[in-house]
Structures are given as C-alpha cells and as structure tokens.
Image 1: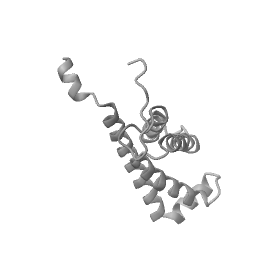
Image 2: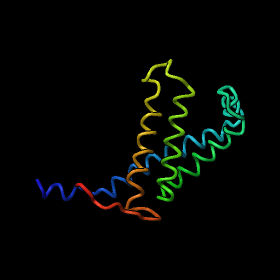
Image 3: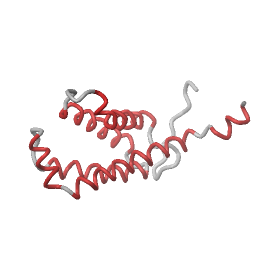
Length: 134
C-alpha cells in the first residue's frame, strides 16, 4: 500500500487544484456581476447595502479569483471570500432552507480552508506549511 500512496500523495498539487477551481468559480461569479452591474447594484440596495457594493464585490471576486489561482495573498483572499459567503447566507436568510445555500457553504468552507493551509508549493509565492501531525 505504501508504494501506491507515494504516487497519490501530493499535498501541494491538491492545494493547487482547490485554489484553481475556487479561483475559477470566483472569476466567473465576478465577471457575471460585471455583466449586470445595474441589476447587482439594485440587489445590493434591496439587501440594505449601498449600491456601490455591487461594483466592489464584482471587482473583489474577479481580482481575488485571479490571485487565488496564482497563489498570491491566498490567506487574505480566502478570509475575505469566506466572510463574503457567510454574509451572503446571512443577508439572503435561512427561510429558503439550508439546501438553498449549498454553494455558499462550500465556497465558505474552501475559502476558510485556504486560510489555514496557504497557497502551497505550486504558486507564484510559494509558502509551504510544515507537516506537523501527519
């Protein structure tokens, strides 16, 4: 079994795949918000936030998604995205049930996970964590 494990155990590659997919999702979400800024600004006002938050969130998701893919400021953007997803869940309410927030919950968990593990070896700014407790 150890021979097989050495071929499939690559922590840094796993972190890179998670960063790549999460970054891609945030880029898509940010870009779609840019495509409909008046609608997003209206939604922000409806949720009790200032209209400029639509532009801010769109830019944050686009720039932050690119940064996640590159491995730049991974912990910072992970924290910001995690908080953003929790705020989305809070603002849209639990009245629709937990199932309607699966997407936001997964993104929050992945984002906070990236805060804890960092960017890994495959990044523009590699910062590998020591293998403590493994």
